[in-house]
Image 1 (cartoon, rainbow, N blue to C red):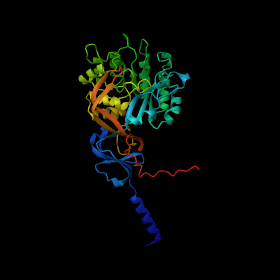
Image 2 (tube, rainbow, N blue to C red; image 1 turned 30 degrees about the vertical axis):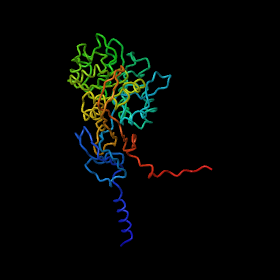
Image 3 (cartoon, rainbow, N blue to C red; image 1 turned 90 degrees about the vertical axis):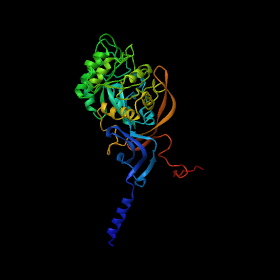
Image 4 (tube, one colour; image 1 turned 30 degrees about the horizontal axis):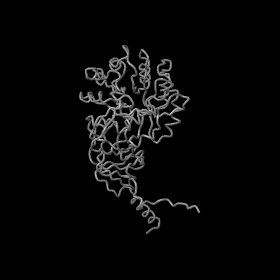
Length: 412
């Protein structure tokens, strides 16, 4: 046989013998709301992308196989309301946390900072936090140019819609909307300027409505001010008459939903109460998306993390598939990022593997009141760009007895 041909055939045979996939999640219950998949399937990953979804992919086709039987395999979770821009002390009060410290352990692969920074300090946020995070960090700009916690959130002179829109247009890969928050003025300056910036960029506005008065009320906000596709966060807070004194859901909330406004949980330290959430569920008013409002005041209180908030919604009565939808595909659509929140072949392999424990559990609201539940979600494994970012029980790891440790250089 010609030597060149022999070398070629040998090389081709070696290539053919190489596993096609870097990692195979085998035997899990895949829930991908975008594709309407909810069944036991295998998920193969190659080159940081989802490579294949199918039943019974041979283990021999992957370099590493992870047994996830009995677990849920979902798109990486998307938390659309967090605070992760840690300022220097001189620049204003900061209650933010580092994104990677909280994301992967709860299955979150994408976080949206909701208004911590404005257009003025976005470049600093990008340089300090976004560019160094392994978590995908996106941003909704505060309509207040100086951002949150700077003492200027009630100053209309800080609300420059054109400047905010210009910054968003210059950073379309990161900025996904605008935020109006905590406003305590008499009129609609904060809302009107945020919506103006949204119109200039075709991006959504998230509203933490702040304080109400005779002029500023949720009826006008949801019927007249916000647009379809805008987001009302803290929907179970009760601070703004979301729930009326007679225990009925405020008709303004229903009007907003009929107009196409999205309702987000935004749990936080003071925005989720059982006395509000339970009647809402009883009256079949469910959230569109689940988010944490993660910050230093909420992380060790009733909120805790994304999967704790998801567990609350699960125990309120939403099926697990819907809880996953609220935390993935719905969230992706609210921020106009349809490339996220799904397991399409070719999509970046951001994946969460979740366990639902059965038993008796306690869940705490923002006031410190508890409600008992029978199901608790646990994150077993998180992939970010196809790499293991969190592995609670070493499912993707090798037993130490066969693991090849690097050689140590002994010091005499």
